[in-house]
Length: 188
Length: 183
Image (cartoon, rainbow over all chains, first blue to last red; front, side):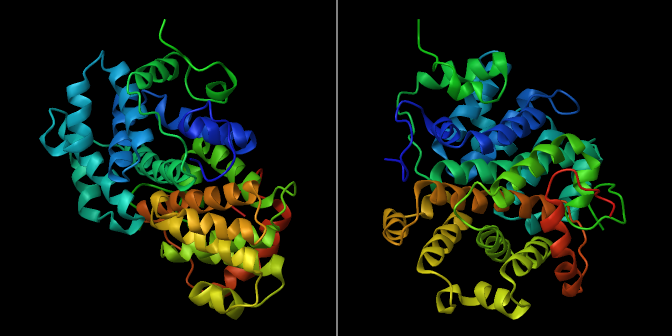
């Protein structure tokens, strides 16, 4: 049960955002800027960074929500998203993305865990300053989102078939307050 | 030296904010609503204190001093008071409600799941409302983001702590939106 009185019909962060729409609005804009862009990193790569960090923070709701969104962008490749989430070094993705996932994992522990060597390695593999900036901020932002969700004990749906439905909604319309003002997606 | 090419004259979070204004905007809007909006039963000083405390737990020099300077301004206290809060807030002359919220913030800093039902009950018993608990958790969570953004990109920070104290009143007056990053 959530620590505060929120709408029981809304899952995860959606209930918290509905409780506090004035803070939800900038968080939605931030998510759109960081995750809904193919500039440098693809939307799928950005979501996989978010998913990996959420996995490291042990946030069930966020890792499964963003994992499902990455799956949408990758035409249903659940296996790849699962590999990148749990063991990126062994996953069939570019060395550049692996290097950025390693930076993200350090950010998850704390900003000072990022090393010059990690950054140099990412740059040698073709990561731009913008890619590194976005990776660090995505990882940092999910250290916020994950703590927000679990720190208030937001409701986590156990019906796993509901995650792809919400993921498709984000894939189609992006982030924003519509995720709690509009009816929640249901299987038709 | 920062890990990416940032304007060299800008310390702390200002460099990355100048680098990518599209993300700076919602970050600043979030800070404004959480820390400065007066439609809130926690004072600005209390909210800045929560931000300062979490930043000290995350060992982020820039953030703990920038927000410590702002908290010091609102609370009309000295740097020793802020430092003593960071060291052991339980021994300080602040309300039991604020102590219970700082305890929740410290748990959030470790990870969301560290917050216990007992901590929440204790805060409610001391008079904390749902919104105050919500805002405490989100301030603590947001500073786990801001601190990592600042240190994860290897930004620099002025080492003279008095500089931050002198800047406090200005940020209090101008707020977090529409300020000049270069001033």
